[in-house]
Structures are given as structure tokens and as C-alpha cells.
Image (cartoon, rainbow, N blue to C red):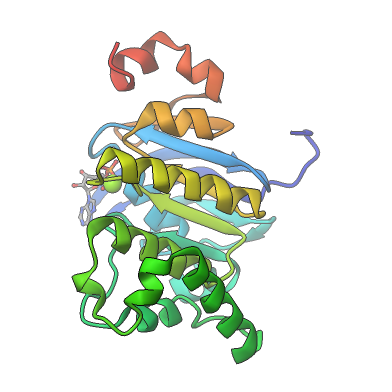
Length: 242
Ligand SMILES: Nc1ncnc2c1ncn2[C@@H]1O[C@H](COP(=O)(O)OP(=O)(O)O)[C@@H](O)[C@H]1O
Ligand SMILES: [Mg+2]
């Protein structure tokens, strides 16, 4: 990407944590419009905390977060989502006792473009996922894990985000469904959404992404293009099975 390009998302010297416990230490990273960037790291390295910080869910000790040049750190999660950031949270977090259709509608709460545009997007979602259409009035908790993940991703997309945060979207899914989720991520990216992807499945994530960052104990210890990371001995040993 050209050095003069404005980053879509920038984390600058970000320090943040939960209560008195600092989890992230001077994290610097950026995403440019149109990229898929992955964030790798072992358990408890701070990946979910990074996602939560971007969404405004924790207070920062220092540093800042910018979206398209505008400072968003300090804003509330609804304000940040209204600026075009959506998340598919770890563990999906659909509302099990609401219907599939109600779950989808919740993803669109911040939209200002009218009921008709929303209806069209919901119809497009149902055309893309016939299983969700068949179960539109059913409680979302009755869906299979794979269907719940498709619902969680579809719900996030109904906010028409410019930046989509995906926190371990393939977690707990059978291999065929993992492939389906990755195909869907590619499709969302091709349709113009910038994607920040946290994944345990490092190889698949790096094959999909253009660049990546590796977190260890809340610090970025490595960054590079996907091929640099795939060829890095440290990444191979820690995340690609040697
Ligand atoms: N809601 C929370 N409250 C307190 N501590 C948390 C919370 N979420 C995560 N942590 C702590 O933050 C650290 C990083 O966790 P997390 O960001 O979830 O890691 P990862 O997603 O990389 O597995 C861990 O030590 C974890 O215990
Ligand atoms: Mg996590």
C-alpha cells in the first residue's frame, strides 16, 4: 500500500486492560481499506482484548485508536459501531431466545437508510443462506453451530460495516464448515469490506489475509506480509505445527 495512504484503522501505542490488569502493551498496528489482516497469538495473548478495545468496550491506559484518521478511542461502542465498525464476537453471541429474523434486525439498529433498504438486505441474506430463511421465525438457539456462525456474521453485515472484526469465526466448527466460513469471509472482502481477523487456524488465516500481526503477552512480537509470516520459523514453530 502507498505510504501516503490514510489507514482505515490505526492503533497507536495502545495500552489497555481489565480493571487493574494491563493486557495490551504499546500495541501498534494498522489496516488499510480493502485489506484482510489477521491477528495471531496463543491463548490469552490479548487478541479478544484488542478487538474489544477497538469497539470501545474497555478504557485505555494510554495510546489511541483512529478510524479513517478520526480518533475513536473514548467513544462508546454504539458511537463506534455507528461509524462503520461491526464485530462477530468470539463464541458468536447470538441471542438464543430471539428468532433468527430478530437477531438479524438487531444487527441493523444503527442504520439510517430506511426500512426498504434493510428489507432488501435481509432478503439477500436469506437468499444467500436458505437455512436461515427456513428458520426465520425459529429461536436462534435451536440452530446448529455452523448456522449460528452464519447468523452472527450476517447480523454483523446488516450494519453495513466498512470494517468487520471477526474473533475466531471458525472456532468449534467441523472442517467442512470451517471452509464455508473462510469462503464467506473471502466473499465479504470481495464485496468491499475491510476485515480484521483473529484466528486459531493460523495457516488458513494467513492464506486468506494479505498481512498479519502476532501477539504474545499483549505485545506485537512479529508482523509482516502473509508469506513472510508463513515462512517465519517462529510462526511455523508456534502456530503452524513446526
Ligand atoms: N472480561 C475480562 N475481564 C478480566 N480479564 C479479562 C477479560 N477478558 C480477558 N481477560 C484477560 O485478558 C487476558 C487476555 O485475554 P484475551 O484478550 O481474551 O486473549 P485471547 O483472545 O488472545 O485468548 C487474559 O489474561 C484474560 O484472562
Ligand atoms: Mg479470544
